[in-house]
Image (cartoon, rainbow, N blue to C red):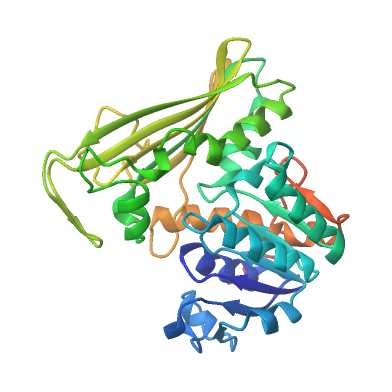
Length: 354
C-alpha cells in the first residue's frame, strides 16, 4: 500500500518509522507545512537511513499517489482545517488514520456536522477512516476493554496517563494549551470546562458501550499546582509560582456511580505535586489501566523510543496502532470505524525489521 504521512512532528516521525518497518506498506510521500523542511529526506527526519522520499508541500500530487494516509498534523488549534484535510484524503480514495479529530474517537456520538461529511467522503472515495488518540488511544479504549475480560467483577475502570512534560518538545502546546509555566490565573484551553469531555468523552462512551453500559452523565474534575522552584529544560525557564502540575479526570457516570475514568496527571518537573500518582519506576511517564473489582488488576505500560524518551515511546505506540490498522481498513467496507471495530494487528513479518 502506497502510504502518505501528512505531518512531520513527533507523531509524524514515528509514523514514517512504522511504515518503513511494515512489510505491506510503502512510504509514498511525506507532507509538511513548513517551507524550510521541503526537500529534506524523510528518513533523516525520522532518524533513519535516507529513504529517497523527500518532504513536500504538494498535497494534490501526494494524494494522487496514495492508497492510505496517516494524518498526523495537529488539530488542536485548527480543528476545522484538520477535518477538511481528512475529508479530502477520504474523498481521494485513501484509507485514512489520524489522532487529530478528537470527537471521532467514538463516531457514534460525534456531532453530525463533523461525522456526516466524513461519511459522505468515505462513500465517494470508497475509503475508510479510523481515529485513535495520541495519549495513546489504545490505553483509553482497547486495552481497558480487553483487561476487563480478566476480571470476575468490575466496580470501576480507570485509565491513567502519568507524564512529565519536560521531555516533550512542543513548547506551544505545553505552555499555551496545557498551561505549564503560565500564571495560576491563566485558564489552560485544554482544561476549560467542557473541553476534556469533548476530547476524551468519546473514549468513555466507547468503553461503556463495549461493557454494555449506558453513560448517563460525564463529569470533569480539575486540580492544579504551582512550581515551588524555578525549572529549566529544553523549552526554557518555567518560573516558581507558575503552573507546574495538572491533574484532571473525565468520569463516566452509570446508575449514579462513577464507573469509567480517564485521568491525566502531568507535570513539568518530577518535584511538583509529588503526592499525586507517579510512574511506578520513578521515570518520566507511564500509562496505566486499573480495574477495581475482584480481582483488582493493574497494568502498567512504559514505552521508550528515540534514545530512551518515554514521550517518544508513547507517540510510537500511538502511531503503530494507527499504521498497523491500514491493511485491515483497506480490506473493510467504506465507512467510519472505531477502536472496537479495528483489531489489534500482531507484528507479522516485522520481527527483526529496522
